[in-house]
Each structure stands twice: as C-alpha cells, then as structure tokens.
Length: 323
Image 1 (cartoon, rainbow, N blue to C red):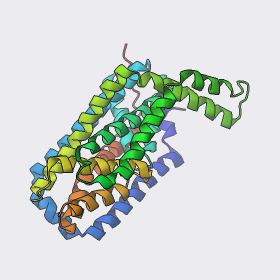
Image 2: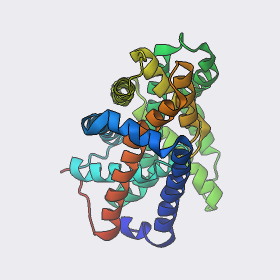
Image 3: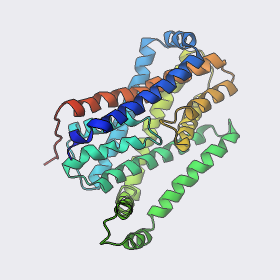
C-alpha cells in the first residue's frame, strides 16, 4: 500500500474528524474563557510577541526533528532531510490524538521507503519517552513552589524508569518474543511479534550515548516553548518568576501526557490555569494566557501538520533515501 492510498478514504476522514473534534472542544474552552479576554491578551502581546512565540515553537519542532533523524540513522534508515522533514511535520496533524499516538502515522509514510513498521514505531516510542524524560526534569525547576505536584511528577518519573528497566532486559524480551508461535499467522500473534520487534529496535535508540544526545535535544526543545510561555506572561503584565513559568508549562505538558486525552486537551489547560491563579494571576488573564500559548504551540503544530498531510494526500510526493 502506498503512502497516498493509506491516506485515502475513511482513514483520511478519520484524520479530519480527529482534528475537527479537538478543535471544537478547544473552541468550547475559548468561549468559556471569554473571547474578549483572549482578544485583549493578544493585543497586549502584539504581533511581535506572537511571532516570537511561534519562532520558539518552530525551534522546538526543529530540534525534535533532529532527534528523529538521529533515531532513524541509528536504526539504519538515513533519509534525505527535506523529505524526512515533510514526513515528520505531517505527523503533527494528529498531535491531538490520545498520547499523540496518531503521530505514528509517520510509519505509514515511511513504509514505502523501506522502513519497517517496528523501526518507525521504535523511533516514535523513543521520541515519546525522551519527551517524557525531558518534561519530568523541567518540572523539577519549580517543585519547591508547589510540592503537591509530586502526585503528577512521581508517576511520570516511575513510568520513565520502568520503561528503561524493561528495555534493558534484552534476554527477557528475546525470550518472550520466542514464546510467540513462529508459524502462527493470526493477527494477535503478528501484532505481538511486531510489538517485541519494536521494543528490541527501540533499545538501539536508547543506548546511553544516543539517549544522552536525544535528552539534551528534548530539554532544549521544551525549554524553548516554556521560555515563550514566560515571555507571554510578562507581556501580559504578570509577575511570574522564570522558574515557576517553566515548572507550570512542563507540569501542564506532563499532566496532558499522563491523561491520554487527545493532545492533553483539558488536563494541560486545567493545570496551567490553576497554577497561574495559584500564583496570583486573575482568572481571565490566566485563561487567556493559556489559550494563547496553546495556540502558538499545539495548534501551530496541528496547522503545519495538516498542511503537510494535505500535500501527501493531493500530490504524489515520493521521498528519497540518501545515497
């Protein structure tokens, strides 16, 4: 199946339904916050401020793409960066799926290039783990401001450590993989074989040298968006320390990830608004600031992804491997 045919018919409609449904939910949140407060906040931030926030989001995407290229290289699939970038950005169209799982769509687009699903999913899995690790580390900046956040941070840290522990057990993974009947062609057995193949491939992405490089890229990437959030709060007149702003943004992202809600919608915003109000920001301003930063980060990514995905849908774009 080609990448284009994989995006046709009901699959493409499902993509659109996911994005539209999430957008409608966000519209409801915007109406609850009040359009007037949001428009006034946008006016205070100004075009230059919004442009700066979008630039920091673009930096986030660029660094994460560099990490993606690193994973593909480690897995033995070096791709020409232009075409790989178009595939990577197209995945953002499904950022609003639970746990960003829809971004695994990249595997469908990579399959015609000879990248097997276990490898593309291993890169995706490693991405999510690296993001989670970076965000947990960023929450430590302001834990002293709000110790109650341990109820969110500790589960996130335990999840990261548990995954790393499981992936370190190569003999166990191979033994479990070997228990699946090789001759069985049932869908369930094929699925489990691919899951274990993915986990074994992910071990290559989580070697200590690769993990260290990827973690630095993740830390800088998410710090960029947290810094944009801090700037936005300052432009709105809020006296919020940098450490608390970084903590608030990171904790909101962590809450969204652990909630497995589409794009973290609802849970991320609730944490962000609640912490800003806790720090003394008026509720209307807190909601407005939250909406603006999410528009400049989450929804900016979705817009870019939708544009790139439409190119794959409407044009026979065939990426190339590097010689």
